[in-house]
Image 1 (cartoon, rainbow, N blue to C red):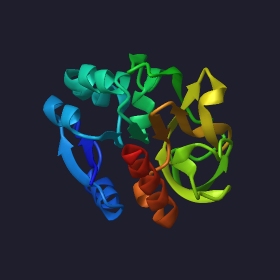
Image 2: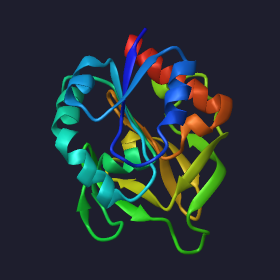
Image 3: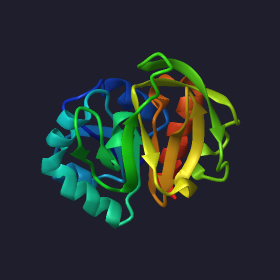
Length: 203
């Protein structure tokens, strides 16, 4: 059974992602320790909250996360976890991210209700991506966010969602995947996405 390190940097409810991953037959550890990150088969970077505090709390272990990604270990970023993977966030000033995905985290447009909370559809652009195996186009998933990642390389967008603007609801580059929505709160569709991630760890 594969082991997933769920990164704990002090923001967000980690229990729901832990339960979701365990439902799809993986062992989990909630951790802020470099050793656990090295010893796992895959990494999940979850979170809800403010970018500035999150990246500050993540800095002590960010080098280990980047090293493991560089060695090919799969990572799944969720919500704020997606945004942390970008170069820069404009939330509450300008803050540097992990720079895995080149681009800026920017606020949703003012002509829609912010935050974007609730169910919305995903238009799948890359159905061949392993994260979206057996996921129908226009599936409903659950969002809670005010910002999104405006990625430079549009070829790394695997789905988009329309909420005042078409924003990337999921991006991927090699073994790094990230969703702006919460798979762990997205019912059967979300569980299938988590199952797909676990399958990637086994391959």
